[in-house]
Amino acid sequence: MRSSLTSSTLAILLFAASISGLAAQSGPGATITFAALKGPSGIGMIKLFDSPPAIPGAILKMIAVPSADLMAAKVISGEYDVAVLPINMAAKLHSAGIPLVLAALVGNGMVSFLSADPAIKRLEDLRGKEVYVAGQGATPEFLIRKLLTNAGIDPAKDIRLSYSLPYPEMTAALVGGRIKYAVLPEPFATQAVIANPALFAPLDLGALWESATGQASYPMTALVVNSDLAKRNPAAVRAILAAAEASIDFALAQPAAAGILVEKNELGLKASIASAAIPRSAYVFIVSDAAKPAVEALLKVFLDLAPASVGGKLPDDAFYATF
Image (cartoon, rainbow, N blue to C red; front, side, top):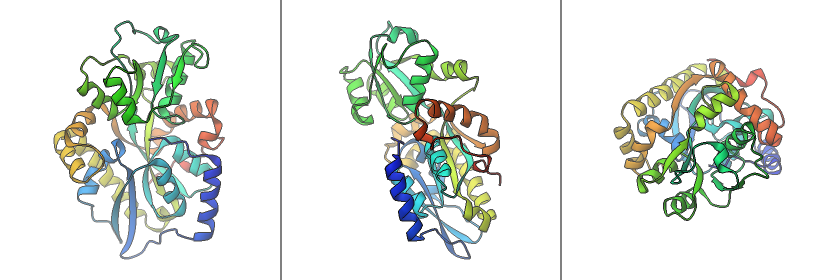
C-alpha cells in the first residue's frame, strides 16, 4: 500500500482531530479498536480477526482497512486505538504530535526484485533499463533508490524508475511479459511467480540492504498504540501485544491454516496465495527498543531522500515504548 500521506492532507486531518475530540475512552466494557491493512500486514494478525482475545477491562474490535491513508486518518481522529502501519507513516504521525507509540515491529523486509531476464545478475545490469516499482513514497521506492545509489547508480540518470502501475496491474503486466523488471512486495511477488514460473529474483534485496546499512533486514510494518490508551489501561495493551505475537507465531507455524482464515475473514487474499506468501513475508515480533536500530536505519534513508515522508526528522525516544 502506498504510504505517502501528504503534508497538506496531514494538516487537514490534524485540524479535524483537534475539533472532533474523537479519542476513544478506556474503561470497564469500553471498546478498543485494532486496525490492520488488508493484505500482508493483516495476515500477521489473523488470529485476532478470527477470534479476538479477552482483554482486561475492554472489548477488542478488529477492523481491516483497505488503504494506508484511510488508516492514518482514523488513527489521527482517535477512532483506531491500535494499528499496524507502514514504518514511515507511524514515524510521521508521531512527529506531527499524534499520541501514538511504536510497541513492536511486526513485519520485516518483504520486497523482491523480479524478472525473467537471465542477463540480470547484479544491480549494475539494470543500467538503462526501466524498472517498475510498487509504492512511490513507500518502502519499495526508497529501498531500491538507496541500493542503486550505494552501487554507484544514479536513479535519476542511469535507470528509469516507473511508478505508473498500481500493484495488481504491475503484477499482471510482469506475468504477461508487458514489463520486464519490477520491485514488488508480498503477496504480489508470490502471485507473480505462481502465475509465471519463469520469473525469479536475481537480486537479493535483503543482502544488498545489509551490505549498504549493516542491518540484517529492513522493517516494513509497525504495531502502534495510542499513548493515552497505554497510560489508561496498560494491562489491556500488554494483552493485545501478547495476542499479536501469538498470532504471528501461528501464521508462521501453520501457513495453510492461516491462509484459510485470511480468506474466511475477507482480508483481501485467497487462501492459496496467503499461504504461499507467508513464508516469504518475514513476519516478526520485535519489541520497540530492540527494533530501534533497524527502524532508524530505514527512516534515515527516507529522511535523506524525502524528509517530508517521515515528518522532517527522526522520531524522538518517546516513540519507542515499552510495556
